[in-house]
Amino acid sequence: MSLGDDIRSDVDKLVGTPWTTRDGQVVPGTDDVKLYSNDAVNLNAVYLYADLLGSTKLARDFRPETAGKVIRASLRTASTIIKRQGGEIRSYDGDRVMGIFIGDSKNSSAVKAALQINAAMQEIVQLALYTKLPHLERDGFVPRMSVGIASGEAFIARAGVRDSSDLVSIGRAPNVAAKLSDIREPGQYRTYITADVYKMLNEASKLSEGVDMWEARNAEVGGEQMRIYRSSYRWSL
Image (tube, rainbow, N blue to C red):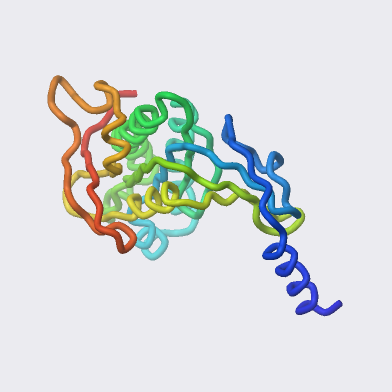
């Protein structure tokens, strides 16, 4: 068969085969979802995306060895915190990591992770990078991550080919969380959440010494006007 015939055959099978879906009680791994059938898991979850700021400047102005250390240190830090707060890592994309949280405290756990990522980047990662790689500070690179969080139903399937496949999360929650992590604005705001996440937060994730850590605003996210909340706060490690 030609390459075109192979692709036509695969696409016909994918499009023509009904989905087999089930409700997930845990975050599925790659091996939990079949590749060559329309197998999927429905999951009620909170999605967190942590995205390294300034990656264009990093790639343009610094050697690959330096950029690699910044990216690896940032992703390792974010991933460690996500896992410590009960999240599951399901995707890395360049300088961004995605975590999935489930369970009764999923909103508050994801927010705690986000605020701890903000703290770790400022208090640990920046210090280590500036100590070992002082030209980063001299040339004006500030290591920070922007975090977006959204909640809702997701449809998790497996995409790709044999030996080169991964899970894909389809739905509003992962899409909005990714878009929120793309927000770039002046000031120290680093964490962005939807109104649905905000209203489910426990007191510790909402207030600091009786003061609301979150500022409400209306914003366009992925072409949609929505109410979101932003924060510049850090959560101690």
